[in-house]
Length: 331
Image (cartoon, rainbow, N blue to C red; front, side, top):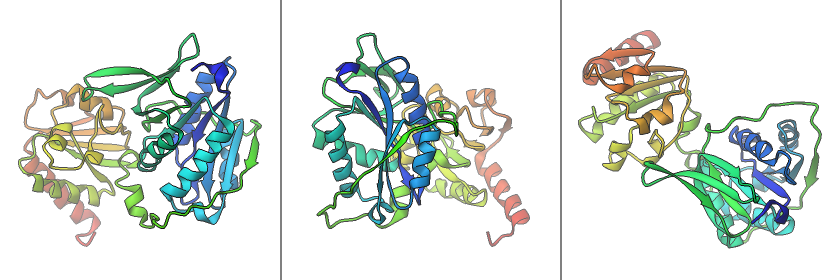
């Protein structure tokens, strides 16, 4: 597929509670970069309720065209309803590529759209490019993150889900101009609807400002409860290194690393994590890193702002005790 075949690079602008998810601005940043001098128009599609203001924000962030589906039925994510409308739009405009964020919604929606369009989908991309002949190249980790695969999609349109916080966010400029295209929503005959928002949003690891992660220093799966208690006191969430996910101690949605989630929290506490390159690739850009490990030679200490050489089973409970004393034991 070449650029001349398809003129629009379409961004799915995911929204939650009427606000566009920041991953959309990262997708716009990459799309603007790729469009360059090529014959491509950067566009976005937004489905939601009362989101006309957000459509204008997408223009400020670089979208030349925003396809707006503004209807109460789109306030909560319904995979069947969203899919039906996106597929209809894609068939109408025949885009060069469609990009989604690798969020819980994006990972749920993109495969459904790809299946209906009978096109390929490359998931969890860490980079995108266009080669000299106009072919779309998608880069993603393969073989459990040991290599990078560079994938060319032969079917059209090319479709990708892109990891959050791995691409440069587009700059906001209120002088940018674009057009909002009001779309007529299609109804869905699907009876099943997702109404439990906590199921849709999931853990929110990539959005968390505080993450407490566990590694091989944990002795039992139940010991994640200790980390959960610390995370709760700090208003954060629990993460994990890959070995514990592979062991089935915790779900893959908690995995931090090259083959898991890329995170940039304000505070990252690594508990019993040695610091493999795979794990460091997913968290080394955190604002503050606290590492707790018995091994003074652990690689994680080279990246830590604060290093504590000690037993996590002594240090973490002490943290919890201090926080409970300061914040109140009822928190």
